[in-house]
Image (cartoon, rainbow, N blue to C red; front, side, top):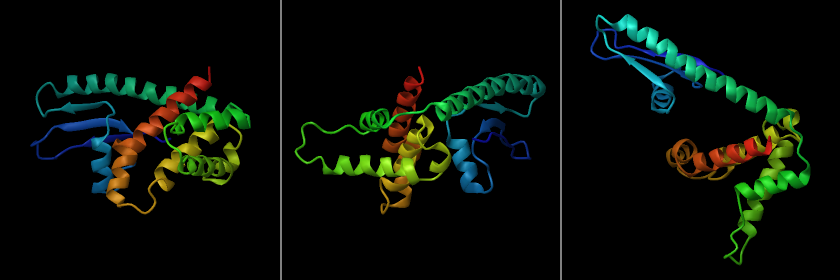
Length: 182
């Protein structure tokens, strides 16, 4: 995961200078909108006499955000070094996508499980993460982002991935994976 420092300024003093660390590389207005919409810590600095003080404050706040990136880097590295046996991987996937005990037809959830197991073996980056917790976590996120609603409206799909049920599933998968590190 890369870190980018984003500075946004109106250049005419009509708006604040916005400063934040983001994992999004801004290359156009769409990626700028995405980077600005995310919940990372951000500092707003008005064009006033105390702007230099605010810049020092921004440095401190962004330092805290940078610590989060360092912590995530350590977690992701531990996940990549943690081997998981097939049963542990199966339990993990079933915990993220549990069977509905009230439903007679479990074929849809079994198909989800099978797709994720296949992605853990042959999905994006599987060759370097196969058999690890990182590989299992990435298989879940790849499924959610690319296979869960493959033919749906692109806008709806992106909103789900970033802010909706897809984001909640990935957050749950991350939390469960971190508990497996302990």
